[in-house]
Image: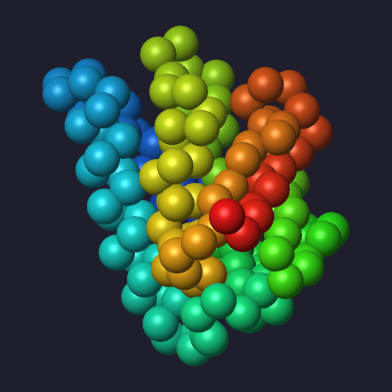
Length: 148
């Protein structure tokens, strides 16, 4: 399983520790909600600063590749078409949670950022399905994003 580059390990470690502390005190749903809101705020600011055309699949690829790489995550896009995008993570942004005994389901944790990425950058009319996941022992996490 790939791990994030060390220059952003502290950030991802903080998010994971924050999640675990909120989960311990308030439960998994509250921890997921707080993580989602926190990540959305940071991602929105980053994406807005990069400039993009909403709904443009090539811009989707560009923005996510640049942003993810800048925080130490290796990603690939083996397929980018007008109505389908395959987005793969080669690194796990949350490796502590991936092995934690009381972890959320992979789709729950990914939902804290994937729903926003798809909705904000591509717009209404898109959905995604997780077809493989590092937490399940796969060699990558893969999201297949399609136009509804």
